[in-house]
Image (cartoon, rainbow, N blue to C red):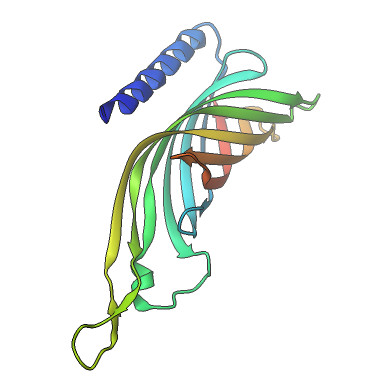
Amino acid sequence: MKNIPTTIFIFLLISATSFAQQLEEKSSNMTYRIGTGVLVEGNWGFYGFNVINELSFKVRDRFSINPSLTYYHSIINSNFSYTFPEDREEFVSGIFTDVRFQYDIIRTKKDFRLGLAFGPSYQLGGEVIHRGYQLSDSEPRVQESAGFMVERHRRLGYVSQVTFDWQPANPNRRNTIGVSMSSFDGYWPYYLLVTYRLGFKM
């Protein structure tokens, strides 16, 4: 039963990619984007970075299908400090595989686009969190570390996104700033990512 969400997601990814490739044979409206940005993890409170690879298949003038692969890793906690030595060993890290279906709700004459996107997201990752401190059982009683909690995630959720996309001086490039919210286990947003992406028309 645990493999059913994974199977469904893989099927959706293959179907969307296959459909977009068939459309690509009729049109060259495909863009490859690579970018990086910041990450805010909302459960434990971490800040970090993310790196994204994305393919964009334009189906209609304002509608596109965008499969992507994103790596993320935390850098520091939300207090911007490490109170205890064990805090430095805490982290969240992993990858997201998304398929976002995007519609550009605004398009200007200079081809600036404001888009909204939504789609399934699969997370493969984990987290290591310090459990805190407790008093030792032996005398003299002193504070000692309670160890770490390790969690691994393989879960299906969804992603929603707002994009700001514009044409630079080079007609074969695109600039995009994306604000995406990845949600899992009924928690929205579980992860907030802000990225700058440089696009290459193919």
